[in-house]
Length: 433
Image 1 (cartoon, rainbow, N blue to C red):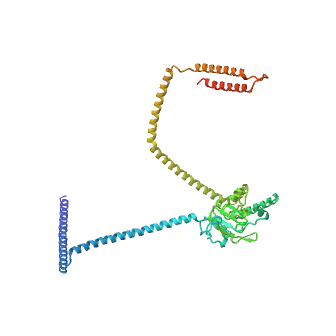
Image 2 (image 1 turned 90 degrees about the vertical axis):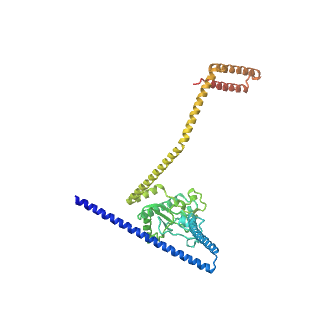
Image 3 (image 1 turned 45 degrees about the vertical axis):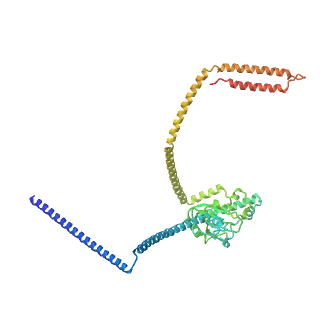
């Protein structure tokens, strides 16, 4: 035990010696550094003094020299400020350029596909077809991928259909034949195109113009299905004619269809530049979609999963809207709580005043000597009625009877007036509940 304690004390003594040595060395180093700095300062002062003596020997005015030094400092500051201003100006110019580019992009995006756009063709953007075709002065931006496919001049109109499109009258038999021909074509094309993918919509143009005559628009649910259909239709024929399929920029047919034609007021008839879609019956259309889902049940599963995902998104949006409305209501309640409390106090004061006024009016009515009960009022009204009857009898007796002994029309009017007065009085006399 004694040995252990001796070792501990011995080690502590060694550590103290080391610390003292380290501190001593540190102090020595610091003193040497101070001496060096002092020597350097002395040398600098000597050099400054030598320069001063040289300038005196040259005859330099020190006041002018100090003025020049101050001037140089100010100039350096001005240069620094000007450089900073230039940098800020350049940064501001870059920001302004970016803002201008964004504004121009927004403006062009609004103008794109409209009549104000002088670069891109608005008719091709809306309908996917232009009457000038390749001779158009504006650009036709053909999409590389799309859900919609346009098959040009696939459907051949019969003479009866052409006559109907021009607004001419046709017999019922011919119209029925044309409708049967159209339904057969629609069914055949729909089921054939459904083999490539799930169809969202199929439209056949009723226009007569050269650029839209017999055009068929097919919109698929997915772009991959539309691409598959396009690649396979390029090498196919229909009615001894090679098909001309291409991607169409049209995705929303509500903007492409002629609204005046839907209302039955289009003055251009079949030569209109907007789509006049051939009408098809709803039950016939539903039967075709049902047949498509029966032949291809995988489409139905996809549509169900898509509808479920849409429902989930809608439910999430509804929840978020509810949370926002609840937060807004809580904030509004907190804001208006003070105003409501003050309004309640004001209401209570008003109710107290009303009660006091009612009690005062009751006492005043009971104390007033001129107030009459309901029985007294009835007696007075009966007296007034008897007096009116006596006056009417006197008037009638004086001039109501003619020479032939017949009564005049005035008597009937007086009797009607009496009945009206009696009824009015009876309403007044009704006992109060």
